[in-house]
Length: 163
Image (tube, rainbow, N blue to C red; front, side):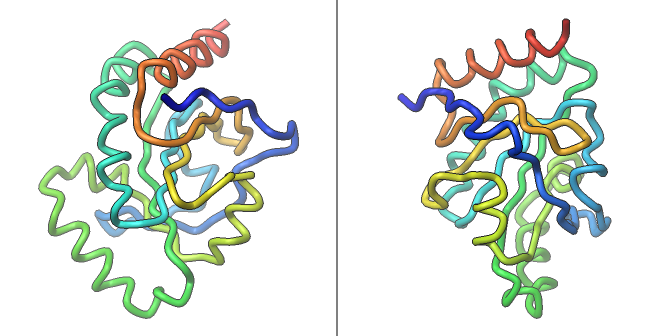
C-alpha cells in the first residue's frame, strides 16, 4: 500500500529533542538511541497506536537478526501539554504492562510543527517510520502502517547499511 519514501534531503537529520521513556528515564535524542541504527516510529495522535503496533511483528525478527538495531515509538505532543505530562505519560504507562515496551516508548513534548519540518514529514495525519543512526542521520523513511513493501524497503536499507 504505502511505498518507501526517499529521504527528501541529504540534510534531513533527527533534531535534538528531550524525551522521557514510560519508565521515567529522561533521554537526549538522537544520541540516546541505544542502537547504532534505530527504527523510530513517530506518531502524533492516540489513534495512531494501531498503525504503530502493526510494525512490531515485522520488526521483532529484524531486531533479532541485526544486533545493532533498536526500535522506538516516539509520540510527539505539543509543548502545551507538558503541564499534564505526568497524567498523560502515567496513563500510557499504566496501559502498557511490558517494561520493555515502556522503555522503548519515548514521549516528546515540543513544538510539533518544528519537528515536522526538521524531519520533513509530509503529514502528521499518519505515522512516520525512520531509520536513524545515533548522530541523527536518516537513511530510510516510510509512512503509515506496516505493509509488505515497506517492510521489504526497511530490510533492504538494513542490508545496505551492514556492508
